[in-house]
Length: 335
Ligand SMILES: NC(=O)c1ccc[n+]([C@@H]2O[C@H](COP(=O)([O-])OP(=O)(O)OC[C@H]3O[C@@H](n4cnc5c(N)ncnc54)[C@H](OP(=O)(O)O)[C@@H]3O)[C@@H](O)[C@H]2O)c1
Image 1 (cartoon, rainbow, N blue to C red):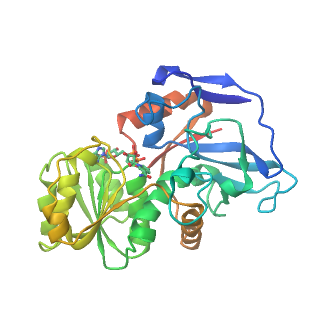
Image 2 (image 1 turned 30 degrees about the vertical axis):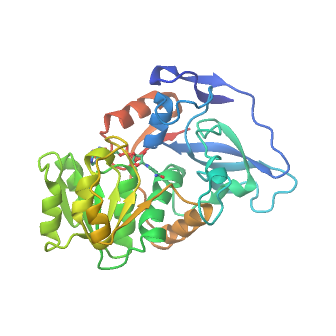
Image 3 (image 1 turned 180 degrees about the vertical axis):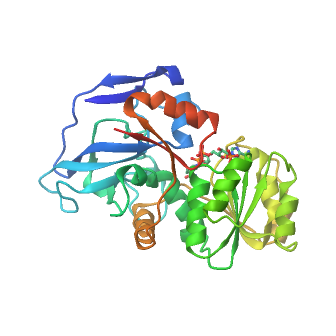
């Protein structure tokens, strides 16, 4: 079967290779992959900055969907013909994240989904919402579940709350869609006015160009009568964390998800304690989070935003698009 392998770190060493079709154990299923999606983590993995100690060669990507084409003798949750998505951390079914559960993530350390066939334990999948195409459903496992976990499972966002989202990448656009689904008010930032117009079309209430307005946190406070927002989805890291602290209300929550502009920040601890803030680290979510999210997506017939579809042979171009930051929502590869 055809796969892509990271043979050495760097985009030029992401190459097509042949591997034997995987054999399934009694508790496993064989999935013929039909679509996969890219996350920023996958780009970091390819470049060697996510885990420089990652053993190579590695098949990248955590997100993939397809049809079950064979099942082991003990399999009960799944039947041949089912449409399924892989879960991000294969052993994290429910409850809190633990080191041993998070060591089972696809696309590193485990081989990922950028392959014609993958074999997974029957517990490591969810079924897809019926109304979604395979390409749409391929966006869900990492960015979708992360946004859901941050603002719904942990954040308990509710109608009337105000949430601040940074940029218009995969996680932030899912967060926008979930926030509108529960009736919250969305303030979203972007480096591009054109992307902000697309965000408004999806229901964003207030938009701020963070390139033209480097002091955007002041605008956030003005938009909230000086109070600050109830929740911030923090994906920027170094350049945004301090601004997130200045944007949130007393006793509000900052979900720390990404480090797009760098991993460390000079921190003033005083507002955290004096304003009783909750700083919540988020690492994707469990299979239960994924199933809860799918129920909501199905009920509301929500459609994820697929910005661009690439073919399997165009995989490198897909990664180049992610590296350029020109996308809005998700980048998908269709087999
Ligand atoms: N903790 C977890 O479990 C988890 C899960 C998924 C993702 N993540 C992390 O979350 C971050 C976002 O992931 P993603 O997959 O959504 O990425 P993505 O799709 O590549 O989104 C990137 C977008 O973020 C915006 N951006 C970049 N730098 C920014 C900055 N300094 N301030 C504000 N916005 C900025 C840009 O939007 P505009 O073009 O609109 O400006 C850019 O297009 C990454 O760091 C990723 O590793 C973490």
